[in-house]
Length: 153
Image 1 (cartoon, rainbow, N blue to C red):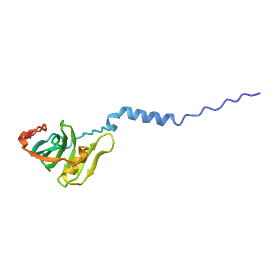
Image 2: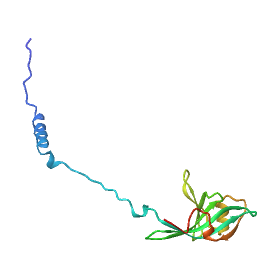
Image 3: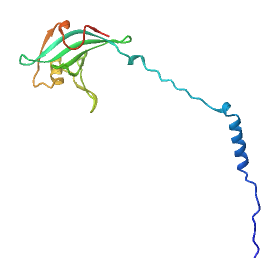
Image 4: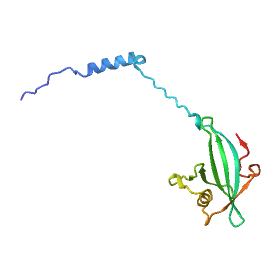
């Protein structure tokens, strides 16, 4: 029996790979690429001044159950005015815009939820979860204890 020894063939892949690797090592600074990403915070993310324009106490059976405050957020591009509805203890219940739409924020459910587009007393009743429509009694904004001063920065 004769043993066959296979012929030695040159590895054709090893040569070009070595040349490419040598080229990349030698000229790595010239072929490298640098990507720089700068994130800019939008200008509307900063704090805004809030002005308390007017206030009303929400009464049910001669007992104060909440507060309605007309406030304006002083945005340089577009000031926003709306009613802020609070419980008697100052906890936020929702908003009513100037078109009469009532909104409640439900963070763990649906986010911002439209409650209704009814008269103010009915919107307040829904936002404060009252059994019947309350009475709104006008109070001086200076005497308001909503936590907002006449001008807050």
